[in-house]
Length: 94
Image (tube, rainbow, N blue to C red; front, side, top):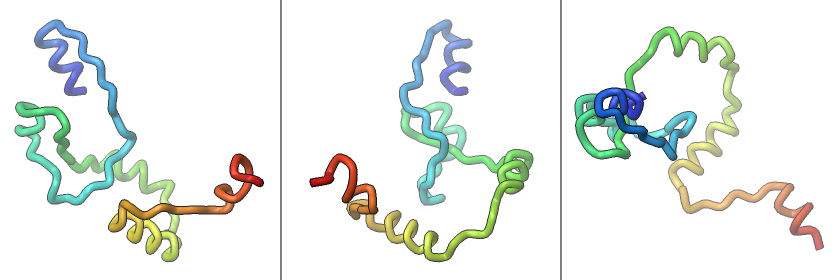
């Protein structure tokens, strides 16, 4: 959206090469909207959208606590490598 707004102002054609579906980041790393608009690329701002939140929450189910613990373990240890059953079959099969 920011690229479209800038292109409308200056007549350019900006290509966005990186646009994740979501970001999972510490709240402390979020920048004020004014900074995101006026400063360097790579910054982001979060603003709660109640209508979107309600839509997302309609499909929410209770979390499996084992899965939650694994996600936090991985989040706090990004150097960790995860192996599963697919690592032992298929292309690695002897």
